Image 1: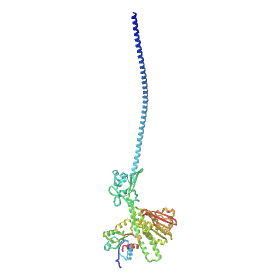
Image 2: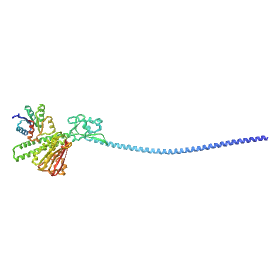
Image 3: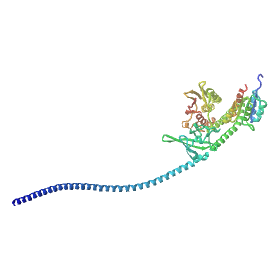
Image 4: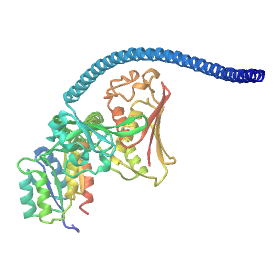
Length: 443
Length: 123
């Protein structure tokens, strides 16, 4: 029994041991589980923390987004505003520009002169109303066409003037020859043309041509020159009779007193003839029709002729005349015009030099020009009046002697003729010492 | 006389000037015909061609240029000295085209100067 009991108690103890062991296992398991749980809990906590961070970040981002959105709204408003302002401004500016354009166009349309602008290749960019009216072309249809083809330029004989000569800017004074523009219908009219280049910065972008119908001016000019021609003819015819009679009387046997009178009268008639000649020449000079006619001139021969013309007057006035000129010196110039210049200078020198004085005419050949000095020992020109010498009708105040009546057209004419033959003229003068005129002209 | 007398035709509408030139030429031994306008000059040329023509340009009815035209048409070679009081360039050019030998402005010359020039064409 005991054994049984023993064995029974042994069994219980085993069972207990087993139980204890199981318990221990469970505990161990629990510990492990607890460990796992703690780990999990830690992980969860970490995840929760991360989530929180993300959440917070999201909140911040949302806030930022909101801010941006607000800003965008503001910017959009601002943009709308500025667009409106801009539109308004553009509209205003366009209106201004249109006004300016309309004004410019009105100005262009209103000027009486024809106007045409071309690009640098000579193609028409724009024309004004007067262009259309004067030429009969519609500007819009001619745009892009060559100006030289739209308006042929011709001379008085209907001959076309070449392209090379039309681009030159010339005022009517500079252009010795009248030119004509041909209209669409083939008729033509005389024009005064100014061509000017158009530059933007330094770049030539085209030209602007302004032209004017000068038919009226030409008619007036023609009437004037016809009047001058007839008037001078009518003056010259009776003068010829007077001069010839006096010249033939001079050859007759007369008393000393009569000779003196006839000679003076004859010289007066000669002076009158030369005044008419000078007046006519000035009239030609002031028109635009005078052009020098170049020919070979033997200077000495011509100078001798000129001085001979003044011999009588010179001897009577008791003046000495010296002529110095290289022999056989030839010059290519307008003979008549040169004679006119020198005759005037010599005549003045003799006229304004008192008895016993000297007049010297000397020629020197310089590099490419001829220099002629006409020097006298005469009254001279007062310093303060010297710059008025080239004026028409100017007479120095110290030579108002009624005997030596001058017209004040001689030097005016000389200055103009000198320009015509491409020369220059200058003088030095001292009162009561004399005057030297120096003519320089191309040889 | 050794040499035959030279014949000069003077065409000039101004009677006084005409008489002066005539007496000047006659004095110098020249036979003178006169014409008071271009037509008379043309008739005279056809009837009795001169050795020299002194020709005014501005004359009534038929002017000096018509005379020059006639001389050209008839291929006449006698020299012509124009004596006029017209000095317009266009007239001078026109005369040059007609092969005029001299172009003189009357009021710029003395009567004997005209003879001096005319004489050259009568040698």
